[in-house]
Image (cartoon, rainbow, N blue to C red):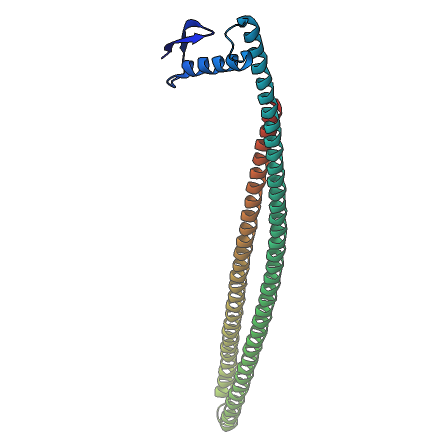
Length: 278
């Protein structure tokens, strides 16, 4: 709300208005102007108001020029201080960014070295486990083969003994009855042939059963070895995936820092442009 006041300037009364809220502002301006007039006129009442007003205006203009010059100097000082602060902050930011880059490279190198060492260790452990399993498998195969050969040998010896016993018994019976019953000798001979064929069939069946048992044991050992190798391979792939995820997280963090740097650079350019326009 505009304020109104009645003031006296050079002996004349004026009604003036102002939008300033400060009380007595117009009276203060009028009193200051009258003081300047009195100083210039030397307190004399006989002076030309126009000339005195011109002198007061020149004095005010001189003070205004001094204030403008001081304001420009103050602005230049503030601008220089601001540029120095911005440069210091820019240097500090670039230094911190370089330190972060160095830390990132160091961290990536350390993690890469640890990852490669871990992969090498896991590879060696996996190879050692495969070698141990291969040795165990070879030992198991050898034991099964030895056992199988021993069983075959024992079965063969048993069959030979049975055949020899049967042949001796049969030959004895033939010797006992040869002179008494020629016909019965022929029947006994036929029975011997049939019994021999039956023994051969039983021997072949036993051999087939042993072979089938041996093949089933070998199949089970191969399957167990493949399952264990697949489990170790899956575990190694899982660990490899975890390390790759960690590396991706580090890369995303670095990208975020790079975006923040670009944003700060953009804000700095806008601020410098604003200062230059001002």
